[in-house]
Each structure stands twice: as structure tokens, then as C-alpha cells.
Length: 217
Image (tube, rainbow, N blue to C red):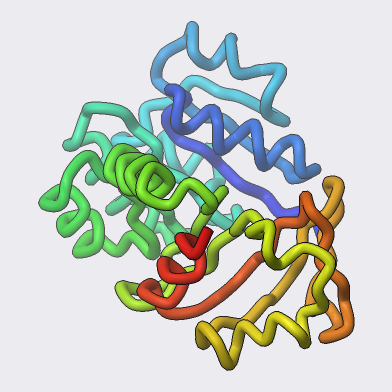
């Protein structure tokens, strides 16, 4: 199903989100006050326009309230970021996702009504540290302070065994929700599924259990 997204702020972070959504076949409107950025974004979005989103009339004229979600990815102008979120929520945009530069900025964005606040620099720092500490972990999504989903490379000792034999639920209190193999993903694999050498397990569980499993060697 094709949805409509708007990305406000076409710097590195905003453009990367817009590109990913556009490549996934979604309708993406790029918005920035900088004419050069708007020009550069044309190959990566459905439409791109120059607009100052701290101006309520400008936001109304774009019709952003009709979009499924608006991502506010404004760079270093905290005031513009906060004003934009406030205007979007007052106009009734159903879902506003906003980039925060620091904890205080994030708290203000939440008070302004942002539905989801992201901290790209902090989150990337956590991701890098996590992967340095657990080299077998290829990717992870933090669900809460206690639980995560991780993509974990298979230890050699687990190759050519079935999920039933591995019994990760009993041994590590973890659930295998998918297996990634040769650029394909097998969702909810059978207990009889055999594990190949280059398989990647997508596992959900408590962080300490995931760490124990990822570092077992």
C-alpha cells in the first residue's frame, strides 16, 4: 500500500530517510528552505519544494495535514524544528516524527506533540558501541531498556543443527522470529529448519540473554 510521506529538512539525515521511502515505492515530498538542497533531492523524492515550515500559511498551502506521516529532519536550527512540529500538530497531521539534537530538545519536541522523537547521533553511537562489544551482532533494534531484536551470526558449533536441537528458548530464553539466508528472509521458521553456515538468526529477547548468546563464540 502506497502512503504519502513528507520529509522536512533535506540534509544528510532527512535525505537518507526520503531516499529509503522513495525506493520502497512510497510517495515522498521533500521540503527545505535551501534551494540547492531541494534541487539536489529531485532524483530521490516524488516531489520537492522550497518552503519555510515555521510559517503556518506556508505549511497550510502545502497540504501536509493530508499526509500519513511527516518527518521533521531540520538540522541545527532547534527553534525552526520546534516551531515546525507545533504547527504540524496544530494543523492535525496524524503522525509527526522529529529529529532531536539532544535530550532537552527531544523533551520539548515531545511537549509540542511529536509522536516519535529520534536521536540519530546518539542512536548511531549506541549502535557502533554495541557492535564493537558483540561482533556477531550485525544489527539490532532496541524495543525497550530490557528487550531488543538482534540479527546474530551463527556460531560454528550451531551449523547443521535444527532450531529444535538448538532450543534457544530453553537455553537462552530467546525466540527466533526469522532466519536471513542469501538475501531472503524466512519468517517464523519451523522447529525442524536446519541452520546453514552463513545464516543469520533474527532473535528477540532480554538484552542480557541476547548478549550471552551473541558472545558464546
